[in-house]
Length: 271
Length: 242
Image (cartoon, rainbow over all chains, first blue to last red):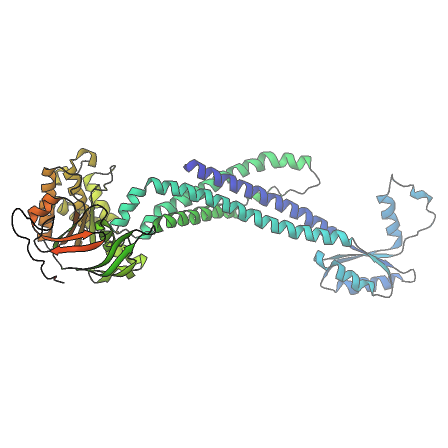
């Protein structure tokens, strides 16, 4: 009986921990991509290097802008040759077709469209490009993931609470004679509840502690292998070892246990 | 000490257990509640220790309106009302001492008080020498005396007994009734629901007779049945004292 409750909390917290880790990793991937999104500003041929630097300075003073890099056309061509090496024979280029450009990065990815629109209004700017769709999609995915995450966490906690509650009810049922006598001789409700609340608390904390053990094992054994197999995904190996994370899961386990047992004993005492 | 005014009790399945009961029981009384099974004796007792709420009417116990009592105050009422049952309701994994002490401990009593009170009530019920025994090692009478000791350990003003001799042989029945009589002499109000005619007829105390949830007779020094036709003429029902 007890093992079932503890085991359920373990599985729940394990799933919760695994989910938080996955969400964290996905969010890190999203952040990485968003961080790399930049606005490419192509200047008119008539713009002089001095004009370009003036525009760069003006953009830098915008609090939404994180950095502005001036890429003269010669540097742009060199970078393009580097990027396309082995794919296109760039030696065929006899002149530099690229304009002078600025690369603008913003502090918050959601500000990209607004900052781009502001830049587009500048007279010396020929065109402005950024991965608009990608930004919007990533932002949407990130938002949806957050919501799904919250729903999954709540659902898991609810499931664990129901199972702990049922386990405690079995214990309450097994001790119903003792409880009936306690009520008969004038024991207060809190006196009767306390042992069961403590049992729920212990179930929750023990289950969460076991889950933390398994998560630590997974961190040591599984994550390095995953990280090696999926090198393009930035996995934060240190995260699940943090005290705050462990404490969070322990508190969730304890809270689920306490609330579940409080409710189940309460229902019995009212009956 | 106990007052019921216009009390009716109808269970969820529609059964009318009690019907317009008016009853007064004075402090220090010794009262039998008699009647066939299912006439409402146990239901009436349950109203007094707030195991059950009346459908209608007022229930007052030691000045407390039990029918209006908040759930959180029920434990305080029950420390003033001891209850004894036919099946003893002892904890089989606890000794006599532990069963009695349990009733004090769960109310948060100090160890010093437990050590003082438990020997006192065990002495009163004559079980001091068996305090280390488990219920399974005792006779039925001894088990009931343990249950009485547990009911008395909080010094209640009222002792309610629901068929206290129902599971006992005549010798043990006499022992238990003698004990309840002595408890009453010390000032505790005793209300016994029973259908043990011999006990009622021998003790000749106030008898309240229930039929179909109604009080059909209330006699001082009464008999189990409506008077002893073979021995003497039925006494007139005395006026009720508050």
